[in-house]
Image (tube, rainbow over all chains, first blue to last red; front, side):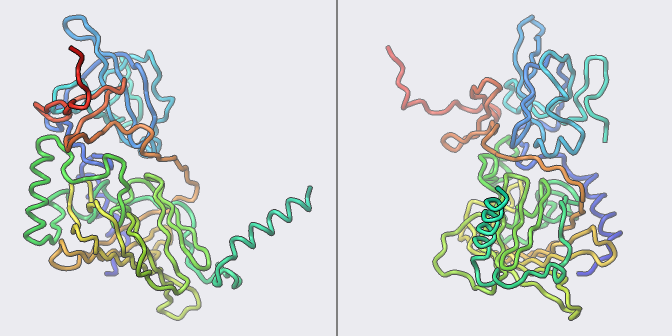
Length: 127
Length: 278
């Protein structure tokens, strides 16, 4: 099973590029086929294991404000993508493309590269 | 003060040298250079890094376990977790831990080699002191591992670590898609860790799994790259896990710790133990 390291790495790089972006467990509860964009104010950024949580206050069309709970990658993955516990703070106004819960409840998943400040500046550099 | 410190160090060394193997001088130069941090090369969350997830893995499942896998996929398609046990913080276990969500470190000592995994703080303990498998050990998710250092070229320096792992605990799956192992817990995992001959900062782990859910042994080649100036991040699953299983259904907690449905049209949990006052 001896393989040339260059060929192995090239093949695995291709697999990584085409593979899913899911985290350690299934993200099947999130609708990956129908992403939506939400805008709001960061209420809390929990840089916790096993997955980071981004709580965003979102104002609906009727004027009511609801908290959206967004699950992201593990802290260990985000750190290596350039995102830290200090990347977002309460009060930051952001817009983010998320994969919402199938249930329709105010929850979803996020990728760090999909989080932008109100002026469009990405929170972390694109991959 | 200095004497007290020295005595403490001597006591620690004596404690560490408890096994017969540890009493021999440890010549690190006889072992391969596995130092540093090893990061996964390839996609996240798959057992065979060269293939797509789920059905794309083309796992050699028996017809019985293919049905189990398909039922799992049907539940996942509705937004459930299927048979993946990790979302409730059960450790991945072997061989799934070697999918390396997050990096690992290998610590070689005379009688035991340790693999410290960042993800979920999982620990593999591989005995290389010549012992056999115990007959009455309780199963565990990481299993009981016996290792053997090899030097096939008789170079005077070991070049590979061969490991056999048994006595594994369920529930486990190969990956987050719910690819199943057999419920009998008789999985045997055989591995060979070695550095790439062309690039010593690349490590391979050839893994062969024997399991009664498979029609034949399943062999994959894992590849890792070395980081010599690593950062490590603590990973304690209970810290912020928002996924709960109540009565076999999957729910998610919001930022306030309140229960939310995860699947479409999901019923709330049974509250029979919380009678409402009339």
